[in-house]
Amino acid sequence: MELFEQDHTVNLLPYDGTVNYYGTIMPPEQAAAYYQKLLHGISWQNDEAYIFGKHFITKRKVAWYGDRNYLYTYSNATKQALVWTEELLQLKKLAEQLTSGSFNSCLLNLYHDGSEGMAWHSDDEKSLGRNTTIASLSFGAERKFCFRHKRTGDTVCRVLEAGSLLVMKDETQTNWLHRLPPTTKIKTPRINLTFRSIVETN
Ligand SMILES: O=C(O)CCC(=O)C(=O)O
Image (cartoon, rainbow, N blue to C red; front, side, top):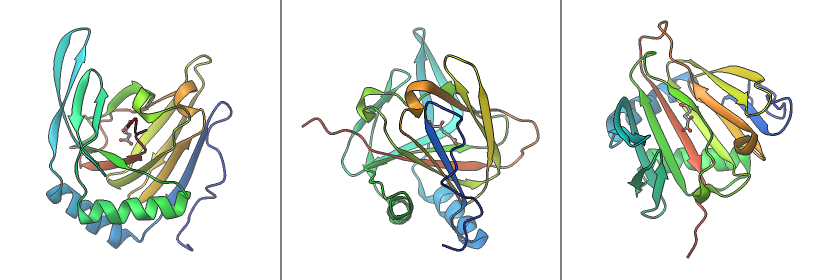
C-alpha cells in the first residue's frame, strides 16, 4: 500500500487507548467517486435523540447498515440496520484488510457543512462490548476530529482527509471522548463511515 502517508503504527493518544491514523488509503479520484456514490446511494435520515427527555432532530443526517437487521440504540433512539450496498461492502472489505479486523455494521454520518458536527461522546454502548475496534473512513470536506481524556482533560486533534482511515481500539472508548467540532471555515459536505462490530447475543 504505497499510498500510505502516515505511519499507522503511531498511537495518536498518549495513554489509556489506541488511535491509529492511516492517512489516505485510496487515490483522490477514487475517494471522490465513493463520496458521490454515498451521497446519492445511501438512505440518509435526519438523526434524532432524546436528551433529558427532550426530543431533538439534527440537521446532520445518518444511516445504519449491517449484516443483519441489528438494532442500535444511542441517545435513547433506536435504529434498525439496512442491507449493505455494494459500495459499503467494498469499503468494509478494505477496512477489514487494512486493520485485520472484522466488522458487521456501519454507522454513517452526513455533515452538510461546517455548522454541523458531533458533540463529545464515546462509543461505549453495551452492544459494542468492551475494547471495541471502530474503523472510521472519511470522504468529502476535511474536518478536525478531537479526543479528550475523561479524567485528565488532555486533548488530541487530527484533521481527517478525504479517503482516509482512522482506527480507534483497545480502551479508547472507556477512557476518551471524541467529537467533530463545528467550524465556520468549511462550506461543503463531509461523509463519515464508522465500521463497527455489534456483539451478537443470540
Ligand atoms: O464524523 C466523524 O468523524 C465521527 C463520528 C462519530 O463520532 C461517531 O460515529 O461516533
